[in-house]
Amino acid sequence: MKLSRRAASLGTENAFVVLAEVNALLRQGRDIISFCIGQPDFPAPLNVQEAAVRAVREGKHGYTPSAGIDPLREAAAKYLAGMRGGLPIRPQDVVVGAGAKPFIAYAILSTTDHGAGDEVIYPNPGFPIYESQIVACGAVPVPIHLHEAYDFAFDPAELEKLITPRTRLLILNYPHNPTGGLLGRRALEAIAAILRRHPQVWVYADEIYSRLCYTGEFFSIAQLPGMYERTIISDGASKTWAMTGWRIGFTANPVLAPVFTRWITNTDSCASQISQWAAVEAINGPQDAADAMKQSFLERRDLIVGLLNGVPGVSCRLPGGAFYAWPNVTEACRRIGAADSEVFRQRLLHEAGVALLADIHFGARVPGEGQHVRFSYAASSQAIEKGVARMADFILKNARAA
Ligand code: PMP
Image (cartoon, rainbow, N blue to C red):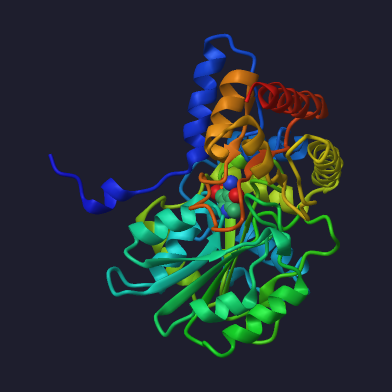
């Protein structure tokens, strides 16, 4: 039987593919230290767990409105606004989904037409779902390159060049997966100044790591003049409260909220009611667990970046947010005779028992930027110390052999 071209070409999140490879090695009894998974290594806070149990016991088992239960839309509206300079976000502007991820597709589907040549600009390297959904939705993917020299931001002049009358959507992600880079207020102001000249372009602000920003207060592009109405603010419970498997995301935009609601009626019906009540508690309840996780990620960032910069042939910028480090391994590849970062990753996994992702798992390698790998440092400090030491030994041993 024939598959559609869309299904045949659908991309994936290669983290899941590498994860399967790692799990297969673990089942063979191999000793692997993994830095692959992009999720907090903590359980959800106890008060959140208790709220979920309460919801089950109180019989909160049914469908909810597609946009989410009112208490969560109210809590999320207040929360999103509070973190973003008091934006006028109302509960009816907020839609709750089964994670933030589904809103990537809903945003593309709601702002572009299939096969019409509508263009979507997205960061490269970047979260792989952007590109795969742009293509699956029948829009034209237009990558904008991130540069190590700018701490993995892009050059606004490059954005200006990429925008055409066909551009419909610009996807931004800060703090950024996979580099941990930020777009600070000055960069966002430059982007907004360009967008004001192109009023047809929507913005999808993927702010899922908003609470893991280490350089000061989080700032959203939606806070800049003229940007609020055209920006889809996307955040959620996964990273902030260690709730990845609970599947709660929330998105705010005054125009698109009813449209996203209709998409959800057509797909998931609603997010899990149990998780929604838990998310109300996550937002409204005490924040000490979330704050402690952030503090722990910050300490581990400093640990891993310091260690990586001591590894021969490796250099690592200090990421401003999220829980990812994106070291440059160009010289390490050369020393051990690995053709590229993917060969380096495979050899490191099989020969040294350290699991990472390679740059090509986040889009085509940016010309002139060299070779990179991604560490998710949501791992214990012992794992970080041991994993980086194994990497250093591996490079030293193989550099001698090469
Ligand atoms: N955007 C980015 C940049 C992410 O890294 C992730 C999770 N890896 C998501 C969105 C999706 O998160 P959620 O669990 O809320 O679907």
